[in-house]
Image: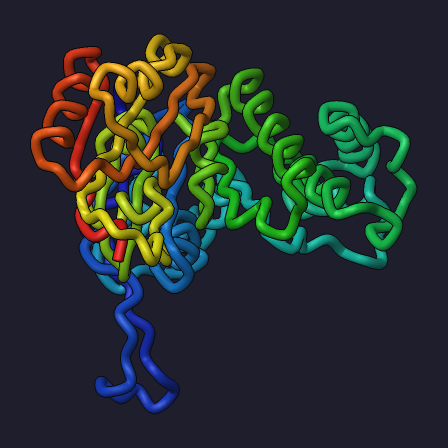
Length: 340
């Protein structure tokens, strides 16, 4: 399958006003990534990792310092400005703070990008009302943004982004300003849009829960570099890099004041997550294990869980527990420096 988005050797360096080389910030370095049509692709990293710069490079709102981006095989770096502007109509964006025009009604906000691309007022309004029905906000057509909740504003922003029938939807921290319940509703809407219209969605976020909720694939960005990429299930089940492990294990601050040092991480699948395997292990080995983290999540409709256990200090008991778990086909790996 050909990639709808291909990022090749992409780098971005910001230079201060004096154009002084000593005043440069290298935001991205040598990013190579492919995103296929119909994916919901998560790009995740902590603040300052470079993920928001990357998403702005995907449509050349931010022009890379090196490398390029291909959209359906077309190199954005070689396009004339007029062709690039036309290509951008197929790459819509939604933002953390909605970016609505406060002096315009909801329906006029949605019509705005259509006016720019040459729709008549009649056709633009008809399309806007269709989109309001899709995002379940028909009754708010003549309301102003100030009269809407955060979730309603983001639904308007999604409707506006869909106005020009894009092939790609870029979401830059689109749920970060929303409460958890509203976040779930917006993510559910995005997934429905992806499934119904086949729009490729790229989600920029710092929250692993957002990625696990709806994404099929994920790339982890750290300090401007691509640390790891793959399916969400692969990265969640078996993270290879320290950056991925920090996001999956949620160990930014660790667990303090624990006596034992030997810890393991267990990953459950859709079958083992419903078995009392830890209780059975304790009974079988006749020794306790301390649960430091327990987490069950839904990844693409399948139950996945993880636990981090502190094992007994006696080596033979710890080894016996690990053997017991592996015999039951669980993924087991030792976690270094989890307690301190």
